[in-house]
Image (tube, rainbow, N blue to C red):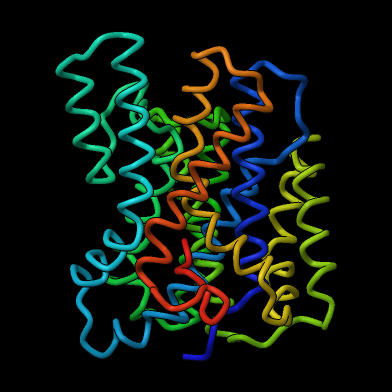
Length: 318
């Protein structure tokens, strides 16, 4: 496998920042921020399908078991999510008092599993997408890696139809069990698109204007919430943006954007709750979110790769 794709790191960083900004504005009841957070999450799954295919699909065909693959994914995703969820447990227990259901929810979230009911991931809401990521990874190892491209496209279409049908009856985007059930086919569709993209095009970029691709993502996230048509159009553009970003050369800002993206995504929500419930100003809350994300990145990514960060980018979050 070739080296890192810095364009994907840049896109991942933009998407994580978009989700964190949306949650900050929502929690603090700030004026509506025009950020298509749902498309940002969809992009994560396209990127994940692409990167998992690039990194693991040959190994899955050559002896890596599905269980072994899931173990690798748990190892990669666990620590930032555990830190964020522990913060969520601490602040929730301080506000509401400890309880057995709260402890059970915490233990389940450490296994990337939902607690059930209307608050499936109450201690760390974004963890719902990590659960769906693990579901997608398990299906990739057990089924997707062995499908031909033609069958993969058929399955992608079926998942898309199922997602559209589910959305007709349940348009609320949340972390309750019902929302997660209809979001699974939506995100599987995106993940499958990512698989097909890498199989079909590999690392070949679309054009030679990667910065324009990053700017286009920012613009699309800004208009995606306008209405359903704009959201669908923004989502449809994401595969092209991903391919257009692939020509981005090695740059430190993209490296850091990619390195920070998953720690930011996995910890921002509970940290925002801490800042809100303790009366911090939104700007101070944003600074606290950034500080925690940077600390988690430094503690785990640089330790995992003790060589200088400038020589090899810290690990990626799919």
